[in-house]
Length: 252
Image (tube, rainbow, N blue to C red; front, side, top):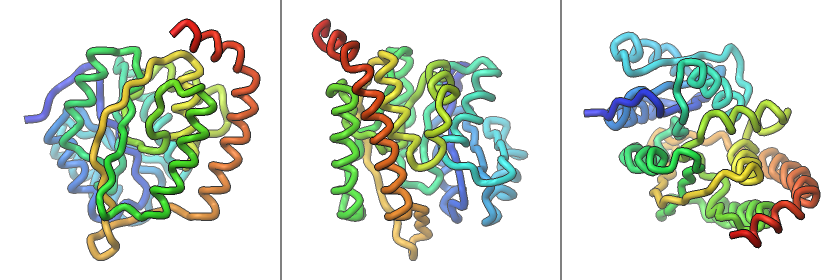
C-alpha cells in the first residue's frame, strides 16, 4: 500500500516517454500518495493514457503543458502547483523507468528527517549504462563540485532527488535558464550556494534498450553544448561567491 503524505509528493516530468510511463507511474503509486505527472507537450499519446489512469486513481494527478518547454520548466510548474496546495517537498523522477520507484520511501524518509536538506540520488550504474555518458558525467560532476567548493554533490545529473519547494522555486524564478537538460546540474549548484545541506543516497539506475521500449531524448552535441554554457555561467557566479563559499567552508 502506498504511503500517504500531506507534505511530500512525487513529481514526474514526462515528454514522449513511450509505453514505459504507465509502468513507471504505477510503480510510483504503489510506493507513494500522491503522485503528480507533468506532461510536457507530449505527442506520443501518453497524455491521454495518463489522464485515463488519473480518472480511476484519486492519488494520481496529471498536469499538461500545451507545448514542450523542457524538464526544468515542467518541474517548476509542478512545484508551483504543489506549493500552492500546501506541499513542502517534491521528489522528482524520470518517466521512462530508469529511476528506482522502490526507493521513493527511503528518500522521502530522509527528507522528512531533515526537511531543509537537498536529498540527492547517487546513481549506481550497471552494465546497461552507456560508457560514454558515464564518463561524460564525471566532467560535469567535477565542475559542479568545484563551483560549490566540494560541498558534497556526488552526482549533479541524476534526477532522482527530493527538493524543498520554497528554495527550489525561488532559485528558478531568479534565473531564465535551468529549463531543459541543464536543470538538474544547475539547480543543485544554486541550491548549494543558498546554503542548503546536501545528503546523498545511493540508488540503482537502469538504461533500457530500444527493443525494451527504452526512450532517450539525449542529444550528444546539443545537450553537451548546453552543459558547457551552463558551467561557464556557473563558474562566473562561483568567482563572485568565492569569499562566501570559503567562509562557509572554514566554518564547517
